[in-house]
Length: 329
Image (cartoon, rainbow, N blue to C red; front, side, top):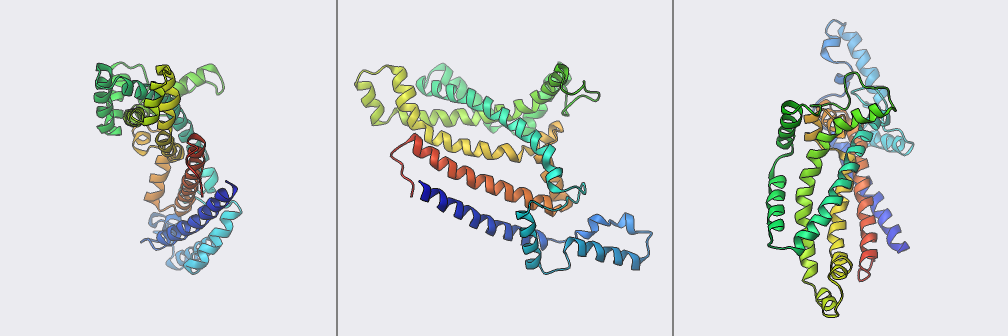
């Protein structure tokens, strides 16, 4: 096990190095000059051309853009290991300060989503597999198909129309009221809760729709295994057969899907965040792409890659604990 963990950590570092190098070269060779973002044409229109060139040269030197791309990457890599991910071109703040609040908002939204999705989809998916072909199963399959095929932004518009415009019981968008209650009070938490209900509902319902079908399929495969039939032949109770023998064999694919949900905790749902004006990582990444905010793009892509590789390694270890037949090399 220790050898497996050390080997995976080495692979993670190697792949991260390759990913960071490719991304850095890609962003540096994109059309456009990052200096123009700091000195846009509307700012330099009334300035002396010689003075503009001097300021552009100073900014290019401060940002290290006057060096070779490979040398720039080496300096960026050294700064990254020291905890310096650069300055955001959008807010002129350090990248960590720039993404701290949006990352927190996205994490809160997606953790609540994961709790709701797995609390609902696992028991419903198991029950659908047990009652295969019955009314509840057919109703769940139709509902999950509608939720799975409906685009998130369309679902968001429908909920906004029903609960914000027609009934008027929930706010249409935003994260807090225009004049919110004092922070830390019960009224403040209630206000935040009212604003999170609609975006959380959109993400959770679309995720539940796909997860129910997945759990149902995994349970149907597990219920048809020889070990389950043997357990029934021994006279074990149906609950023991389903929740001890069948569900344990269905856990491996379910745990694998959970890894994808966990990675999504940090990335945000761009369409939902835009529809509800939720200040999360989806909007931050969209703005960074539009403004060529290379420091933010590099930091977040490396972070997502690291989280993805780390989750894959943890999932491999969890699968070994769930199924002792699996061996790690």
